[in-house]
Image 1 (tube, rainbow, N blue to C red):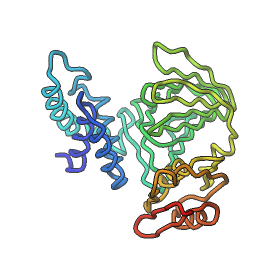
Image 2: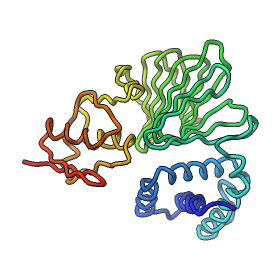
Image 3: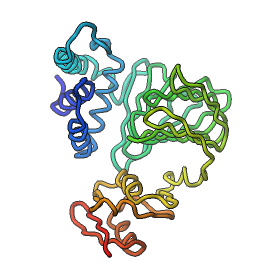
Length: 301
């Protein structure tokens, strides 16, 4: 038997796969994901079952959209019931697994000899059998690979990062995916129709939703500030800043008014206490914060 939570997650994954999935469906799904960290963990676990299970065909042939939706929903629930034990959080070494962090939690994980991960708050990672590959479903990880480690792959949707040694920071958010090479080298593939990119130390590759790749050389101390409990912003829109700060606090910040999110923020800020951060914003920006179970920030003239 599977839990009601995982069955709900299975329905959402099936709905998002449907041909007629609407913007309203995606908005409602995101609202459900944001209700509680356990919702995201269940959702990514179901996605992993979808990916690794042979119960549900990826592209059913000769099936109408309605039949496709019905079949995938039934198949997902059946596949989840069969595979939930395989994709457990404490699997045997020969099995796939999913490791997720709640808000405010970080996990150090030794994937195999010479390959270590630090999984950031509100993140979900799938580990392939024999630990030759990981899937970053959502969030942020730091990867450290010792010299002469066996080749290791990191996947983020359509992206595939292959490396053999080095130090990397990898992010997979809703609007972009980024790989920063802190040390060593790596090869990035975004699909058979696109060229491979060789990334050297100091370079960051940003992959847009359309799989376009932009390479730059950011300040590495900014990229890795999250490891010390801080976030770095440089003339960053407040909407982006709030989205990042919300990843580390259960007390969410909500922006009131479209123009509020356009205000710019710079500096290093400690995360994990959004009430304190909101008080800081009142001192540096023309905004007022209303504190409650959530925090509403509005622009003032």
